[in-house]
Every structure is written in C-alpha cells, then in structure tokens.
Length: 134
Image 1 (tube, helix red, strand yellow):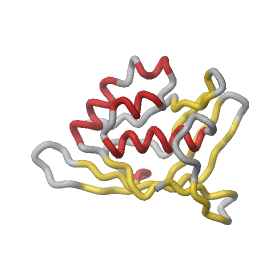
Image 2 (tube, helix red, strand yellow):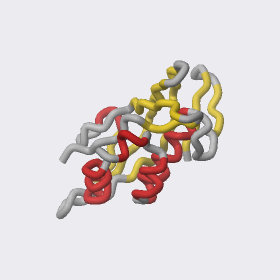
Image 3 (cartoon, helix red, strand yellow):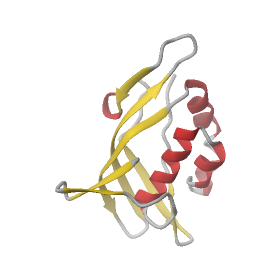
Image 4 (cartoon, one colour):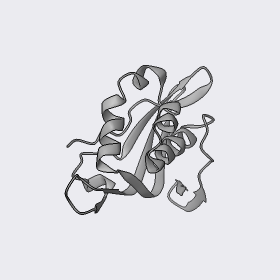
C-alpha cells in the first residue's frame, strides 16, 4: 500500500498504479518489485532505462527484495520531470542469510529514497530504478 502525504498534513491513498502521475508510476514500479514481476517493473520504467535494467532486476530477484510500508512524502514536480520522495521499509534475503528488513534511508543495499520520474508521450515513467548493490 502506498500513501501520499500532502504538505505533511494529511495522508491520502496514492493513485492506483498507472502512468497518469509521477506517484502512480512509482506505485506501479514498486508493485512490480514487490511481486517480483519483471514485466511489471519494465512497464513502469522509461524506455531508455529498460535496456539497462536487467542487472537491477536480477539483483532484486536474487535478493528477494520487497518494498513495504511505502509512504510518499513529497513530489518535486517539473513540466516533464519529477522526483518522488519515499519513506519505506525494505526486506531482502541474501543467499544463505536470514531475511533482513531496514528503513529505506539507512538500507545496506544502498537504495535511494528518491526516485526520478519523467514524462514521455503523455505518460509518467520511472527513470531511476532502485539498484541494489551486493
């Protein structure tokens, strides 16, 4: 579940995954990450990034990365670019190790709490996917 904070005063449900807004594109991408669905993740990545996403998607699968308790804390919106700021818990399990969950901003996988989003052909796409480091 993704919740958006508007001006830090009210929490509202974020839009359903779609390409209609930056937060909706991020919600779709994170839903794909949570399901381990490569086609879903790729559908929400900007076309130039899709070709470079194979290593990131393989790392997400290998480590069983799950993004949970996501809260969108802000969207810096430009005409064709945006940055969606998140607070989340990320769980993962490295091969041969127990599962571990950490806050996104202090995560040992080096994940970012800001995802870049761009508008292409009228829709919004994630331009900076999460890239777990080993």
